[in-house]
Structure formats: C-alpha cells, structure tokens
Length: 309
Image (tube, rainbow, N blue to C red; front, side):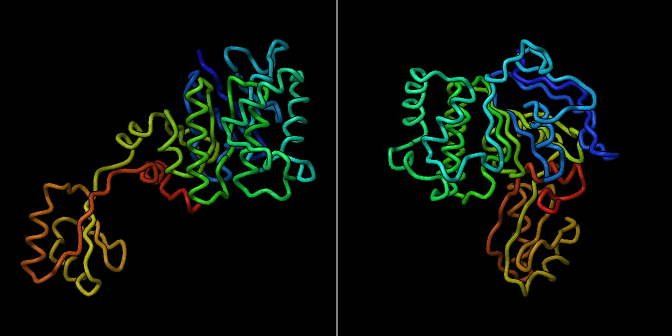
C-alpha cells in the first residue's frame, strides 16, 4: 500500500503554476525525500497533503483514503514544519500537552506516550520544564518532533527539518529520523541538502519549478543522471597551466587554483597521468576519484547548482 499517493496535482498562485501535475507514490515504511531549491513547490505540496491549502486539480490519497473523504483521519499524520509552531512562553512539556489535546489524546494515554518519547528523544525533566524561548535550536527541534509524535502517527511529514542546525546537531537529528523509521513509521521529508537526501532517503524525487524531474533511489539517480567519475589532480598552483597543457588530450578543467578535474578517468588511469606530469617536472600532491553525487544529478537535470537557486 502507498502511504502517500499524489495524482497529477496542480496548484496556481495567481497566474503562476507552482505545482505542475505532480505525481508521487510513497511506499509504506520508507523514507522518501523531496529534493529541490527554495521555491520549487516542496512546501506547497506538503501543505496541500496536510489540508492546509487546496489544490486546483488532482487527487491525493493517504494510506488509500482520499484526503477529501469524510473517512480520512488526519490524526495518522505527524507534522514537523520548517519553522516550529511551538509557543515560546510555554515550557516544552506544556507545548506537548497542548498538541496532545489538539489530537484528542486522553490523559492516561498521554502519560504512556510521553514516557516513550522522553526515552526516544532524550527529553529530560530539565528540558521539559524549560520555556521554549530559552531553548537552543536543537532542543526546539526535539520538542517539535515530540509534539508531532504524541498522536502516535503512521506517517510523519518533515519540511526542511534540519535547516539552520549546525552540522553536529543535524547528524543527531538524522539518527532520530532513522530510528523513527525503524519503528515502522513512514517519513516524507523535504530538503535542499544533497547529503541529507543521500544519507537518509530510500527514494528521492528531484523537484524544480513545480515539476518532478526524476525519481529513484539515490544510487539509481546518480547512475542514470550523475554522469561519469572524475579524476581530481592536486598540485601547486604554479604548475596548473603547464599541467593543463600537458593533459590537453584528456580535456582537463581547472576547478580551483590548485586542482584540475578530468572526467571519465578512473583509478587505473592514475599511473599514466602521474608519469606524464612527473616527466615534465610537475610533482602531484594528490589524486582523488570523485564519484557522481546528487548535486551532479541536479546540475544535469536543471543546468544549475541547487545552491545557486
């Protein structure tokens, strides 16, 4: 069964078409990533799935039930927005209680679920008693995640969940996401971080300007759209121009003041390249094999880097 199925979803803001016949199939139990720049339509699609915005045409089903059906139960979805919805003047615990009330969680069940979340998310009493306004970014994300999980959802949707977090906290949050998925919860996350999508997601859809350009596992996308391996050659900057001339048959590209890239060469080509350069008196500081990345996938599909959007 599909946890989420969107069928030809279209959304306009005025005359601008922000979602262009978007069709996705998210399998139950997977981590599915929507990878694209700001303004690609990721958040708009999430808001439509959550019922926060209407679509102009198309259909969306959650675990086989249309979101427009009276039978559809929104409580099976947990939501972690990019900007947290916590109340700064309330404690972490009071925020969790408030959202539990919105979900209709009974007091006896709340205590059981809170104890489970305290252990899973590392929520100690000091943090729960602290006002949100006095929390760090990582602490706020943990409380926000707790509010989304207190209803015991089957599906959790995360919109840019690690934006603004420092790298160490981001990786801690990745670990929580993986553990959450290990418990059988389906996760849909949007991100503009290539590494995040590559590290976490079972499958990824590349979205740009409201269109889905490609879908597959990170490895499938890199194999199909990422291009070939490249050999990176590092040397002192004074040798770069001479080295470029010597290696002209390989179509070298200078990528920095001390590095040259040659596409299509692999590890077995290193001895030949080294011999040519050292024969001309150029000492190589190092070689690196650069394999296709999701960044390469995005460039090849759109003609630009994700970071430049």
